[in-house]
Image (cartoon, rainbow, N blue to C red; front, side, top):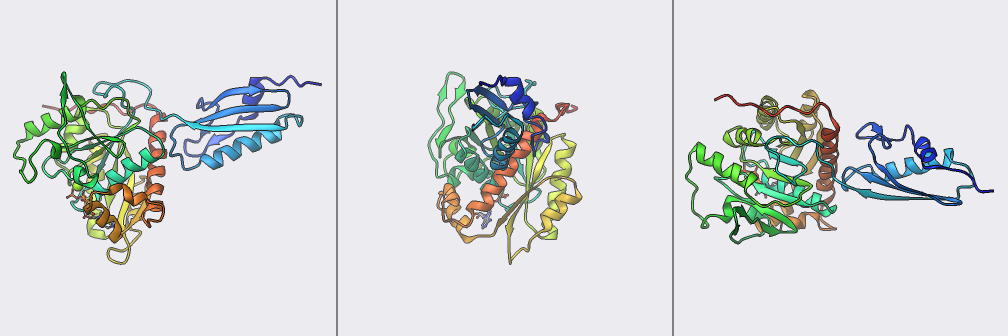
Length: 352
Ligand SMILES: Nc1ncnc2c1ncn2[C@@H]1O[C@H](COP(=O)(O)OP(=O)(O)OP(=O)(O)O)[C@@H](O)[C@H]1O
Ligand SMILES: [Mg+2]
């Protein structure tokens, strides 16, 4: 005899099955879709909040075991499709870039810790999972993104929009594309502000899941301008493991907190014999911010960056591949967590 299973029975069977990162039921998060019930089968889709979800396999097996144990035994086939759709914060706010779901700034309190390398790796990593990604170089005085991704060319204007340069399947914008090589940028604060807001609001970013922004070192004008110009999804703080560097990282964290920019987490870069290890994880715990993982000090990372082949850090055999993918996945999870948090952070009002 045919059973009379309904879609709501399937939904009920999934009560209590959570996205472990978001700590909420998949059903409440609207992640269970396309339920199709056959005579002896149930098919459904789990729509994750990011293709870079670190817990994809766990979520699939949790869904499967809940269905196996709670649905009638004559359901022989349970077919679970895993898909993903990056969510933004859901509501539009003043300063948002239309079509861009998430904007992530990568900063540090100190120069030379690997921000640009990591911003590029994060962008390429998110891209490798199938997301649409943009990479904006906000280091106006010392742009290094064009070199890292091996891109050149001049951004063209189309109407009142500037077309970004395509590199590695991403949309890239940098002051480096607008200058003759080796020319120094001489600019005062208000001009800097103008360039940053143009990069955000006049560049034709199109539809992006993630726009990653590489910040210049320190706690200067650029992060302030960014925080004023748009509601950032959050910031990633990069630091190296040694105590002195951690002090600077704390300064960066304090700055983002003052600017009301959510801190998505801290990455320890250049972990290993030279600078030590573990300092950032400890500091992150102390400061109650997520730790996104560590990336070892590897000659190959520097060489690939120097050669303009940043994407090679993800080559199958590269020692940098797994640590970087780990950072990318943990970050993607934190972005999803940030987006379901309520109420939203109010946009910063700057005096004067
Ligand atoms: N994990 C790593 N292993 C080895 N070399 C690295 C690593 N991360 C970054 N580097 C190298 O360190 C140097 C500085 O990196 P990068 O330019 O990314 O730092 P930055 O923080 O952006 O610097 P700045 O403050 O000048 O913008 C580069 O030569 C880069 O290739
Ligand atoms: Mg840099």
